[in-house]
Every structure is written in C-alpha cells, then in structure tokens.
Amino acid sequence: MSLAQIRYFVVVAEEGNVGRAARRLGVSQPPLRRQIQGLEEELGARLFERIPRGVRLLPEGAVFLAHARRILGEVDAAVAAVRIGRPPT
Amino acid sequence: MSLAQIRYFVVVAEEGNVGRAARRLGVSQPPLRRQIQGLEEELGARLFERIPRGVRLLPEGAVFLAHARRILGEVDAAVAAVRIGRPPT
DNA sequence: ACCCGTCATACCGAAACGGTATTGGACGCG
DNA sequence: CGCGTCCAATACCGTTTCGGTATGACGGGT
Image (cartoon, rainbow over all chains, first blue to last red; front, side, top):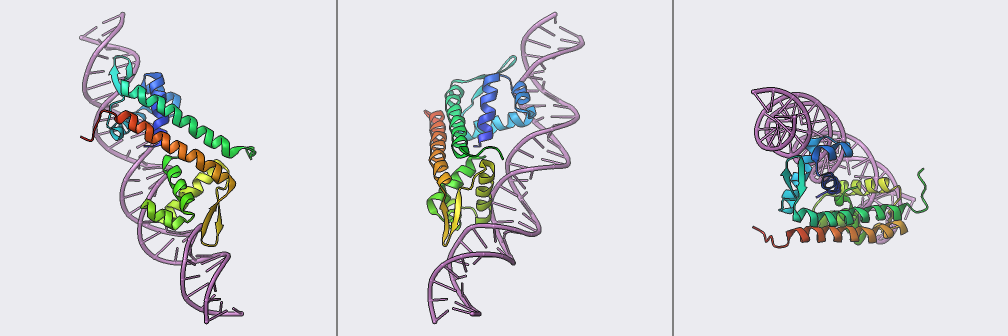
C-alpha cells in the first residue's frame, strides 16, 4: 500500500466518479482505476461498487475513508513539523 | 514521500546503522540509503548525521520519527479495521 | 436504434526500485 | 605514521512499477 493509493482513494470516494477524480488528480483514468483495484486486492475487500454514473462507496470503503483521511492528515503534520523554521529556499 | 520510505526511516533511526537496518528490512544497503536521502531531500531537512559506527538522528529527525510512528500505526489500524470479520481465506 | 457517459482492458514507453560491485572516508591499532 | 577495518556513499545495471494512449464493453437516456 502506498500513500499515492490512499490519496487516490480519497479523491475517488469524494467524487464518486473515477474519470472526474482522475482529472482532479492530474492523472488519467486507467492508472487511477488500477491503483484503486490494487488497493482493494491488498486489503482483501471491495471498497466501491459500480452505479449508473460512477462508483459508490461500500460500507467497508467508508470505514477505510475515515482512516485514510487521518493518515493523510498525519503525513501533512509530519511534513509541517519538520519544515518549521525552514522557509522555501 | 512513500510509506516504504517512512518504514525505512524508522528502522534506520532505531538501529543507528544503515547496513544493519538494511539486513533487518531484507533489502540491501544502497537502496535503503537512497530512500533515506530522497526523504531528506523531499523534506528539505537532514535527518541523520554520520558518526563513527553509523548514523545518529538529528533533532529534526527525532521530530519526524515521532510522526512517522504515528503514521505507521494509523496505517495498521486502517488495514485492521477493513479486515474485521474477514479472516484469511 | 443511436449516442453519450463511464468504467474496463490491452499495450507501450518512461521512471522508480532494488541488486552487485566498488569507492571513499574515518577510526583504531600496531 | 601507515594499515586494516568498518561504515556509508557512488556507479552501474536489470527488473518492476507506473502512467499514458487507444480501444472495448456496458448501461441510460432521448
């Protein structure tokens, strides 16, 4: 599992649409879909289901989403903590 | 930044020795060193200094270490949460 | 029936990763 | 003061992973 996968997952969950999430992330749709699929396989759980105009979070996806946001928040905090007193050179 | 880098960093910090950390992680020393170097560059801060028999955490490294452990703990929690009720098939 | 939106699959080139071999540098010992 | 030892650092290479383009499959709406 990678941080990129987690970030991708959060955006797809927020958009409910893989293609739109891809545009927002600045990547194309196929790699994004593959990363999500890889995440599902690694977790051993399906996170989304297909619906007419996109995808919808399954219950397990919702559970993971909360954790995912926490992880990304921690990462940001870690970066910020190290950068204190270190303006962009 | 990747989760692998964070995991590598924690082990190097614990061992105080890149080569030993590499053996413990099951990778070889050069890639491990490069990952650490990449992490330092991305953070814009040096995390270790060289000492006679290995490396020593700098103050900023210690700050990052605490965050790193939290991140890894959150990741484990996320995985565990999704796996509830899903014993290894 | 046709078109449009969306995810899925196939294939390819580029970038990242890890491995082996080697070098460089500092400490410790005679 | 040189020499061996113990590390991290660098060079180079093969493999794997990743992202991109092109295309297919499936459904809904008009």
